[in-house]
Image 1 (cartoon, rainbow, N blue to C red):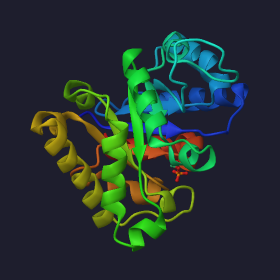
Image 2: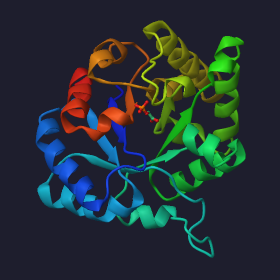
Image 3: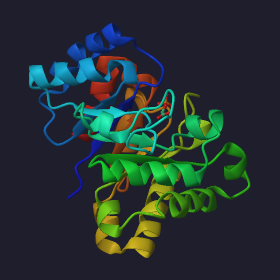
Image 4: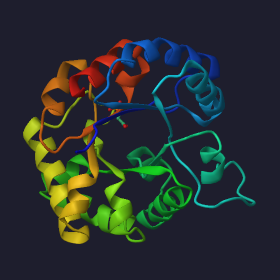
Length: 253
Ligand code: PGA
């Protein structure tokens, strides 16, 4: 049985103090949600203190990072390595978010090395895939997403994919207030599961968690989270408000 995951991607919001405040507010709101895993992905600058707060308060909130550089250590100015994240008790690492692909020019080959590096360090990648509006309107959404999966999972074994998280995030739905229709979201998530089955086997497909992301908020979460192949959400904007994020998690609990 797949345990649903509701992960908050805080992006470049919340300084260290604000991050601690948000976690203090969130922790009691999600403390009784047994059947869903709740994770937060603060900016790098807040990871150490948030990690300590979670440990000291005994909260079950899991910690995630928004990105990583695929190398253990070295002369990579400005970058953060998987072992550095692991040392802060980080569990999840987002790889291939569309903002990094589009704004920082990250290509599939690079995303694939990040996925590999996160697994090698004993953490769980949240691999983001998704199409642009142009690609969807041209009927190329599934082809785009399957191409990303093939490239980004190239160096990963079936047993590893089984423990991974994949987030389907249509680029046109991120931060825009536009959400995929339930049919489109379920359709793509089930297409992703079928692709995983064909590439890595049925058991892997049955285990891998596939999230939906893109303008998920309390008002649309109930409908989206009820869909068969949606194992949770990657939440941006609405994860910055404790009550909204907890409400979304509550729909999957
Ligand atoms: P959003 O962001 O919920 O603000 O659309 C989702 C994401 O980028 O992960």
